[in-house]
Length: 204
Image 1 (cartoon, rainbow, N blue to C red):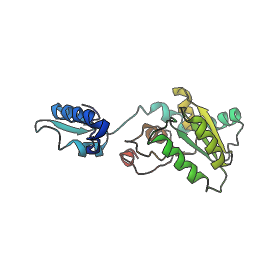
Image 2: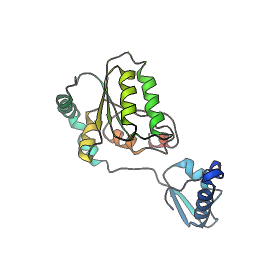
Image 3: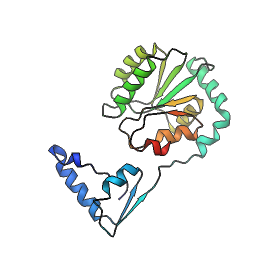
Image 4: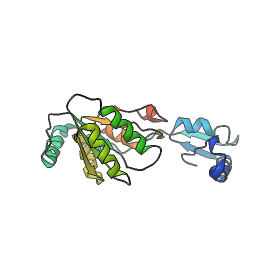
């Protein structure tokens, strides 16, 4: 099993049958590979004695991200012309889907609260799309005093260049297991500001 996860709080209501089958699957596995140490601790009491549990740190193919680190200024200037933004002002960036769940939406709301108190000049650029985009766009524009730009969902090559154009990556990662975007941002040479949730501290 890969990335097995179990929480006893799911042993009730509409989750109880799925929880039971999850417990049985974990107990029948000979090898469990987890990307999050918290998940590893939770399943240890459930695995059979002959089974092995291995922690595999999350990883990405870094070479395309790293290759643009020496062209960061070029990437930022290029995007500044496209968006008509001042490249000398710090650019905060985020890459995230816009879903109404217990992770994405609360993270965006946390960013709104934080940025509404920032007095220094900045631009906040967001790559991503989803069902609550209009809702987030409206409230984020108010919180940032219209210093936010929504780029929508980007193709992989455009996304890599987007990371390279940023000055700081921000994403709370509320209720996330680890978050691959943190690895992508770091591979692009970006400093990252996040919350200490799940396995995020491990990838940081």
